[in-house]
Amino acid sequence: MALTKVIGSGIGTVTDNVVITSDDPTITMTDSSGTNDITTIQSTSGALIFTARDGSSDGEIIFKKTDGSATDESMRINSSGYIYVNTGGAEPSASQAGVRITGTHGHNFWRSANSGTSGYDHLVFFNGNGVVGSIYTNGSATTYGTSSDYRLKENITYDFDATSRLKQLKPCRFNFIADPNVTVDGFLAHEAQAVVRECVTGTHNEVDDDGNPVMQGIDQSKIVPLLVKTIQELEARITALESK
Image (tube, rainbow, N blue to C red; front, top):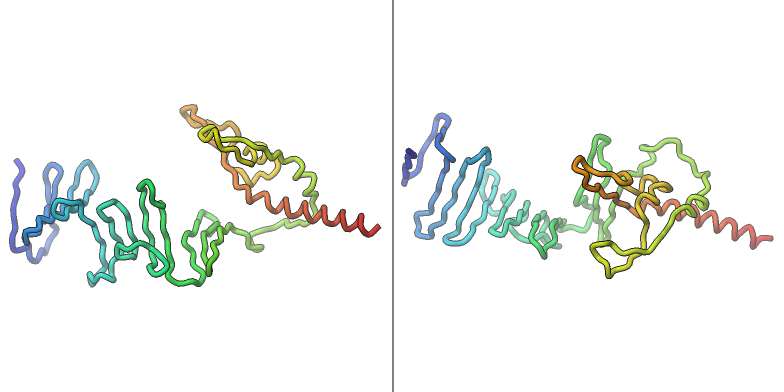
């Protein structure tokens, strides 16, 4: 049988570990001022669950640092399930730095802001090689960056036939099955992969262990170097013809 102990004046100083053992042990904290605000911390099925009620409505869970002041807030989960990091619960904006995350339909999932205008990395991507990409703002512009420093590269050559390779690409028009009324321009991933391997992710006709298709993806910006080199080759040919 569960035992419930109500403590009105506080626990006081605890000089040893506090262990609560029961089925789904729960700590409940109730505001005695008449607002019926209730906060619980519960352990159930291997999960630690925090809940908060503001009277009869959903409340907020706020994480603060040592001094507990409003400006010392580290993170907040509001009544809608939005997560705010270093914003005090305010929306990130031109005047409010920080991050807000939400999966609610109709809202952008990730909102990141730097209240200044100087260079700022909103997202930085790492793998075993270190930093491999970022989303960076500076002034009024955004840069989607991938690793390109010359110190990361070797066997660099500028002498290759881009025009012949470009002619192997097969631009096409199509609609996605899920969007039958919208026709777009693009490539078939496996066809582009045969010419510019790095522009495509995944393997042609790949399936998972259950036989479900694993779709390929394409980053068409990876084709830009081939386009630039082809234009340079064509320009050189035109210049040569004009000089005759």
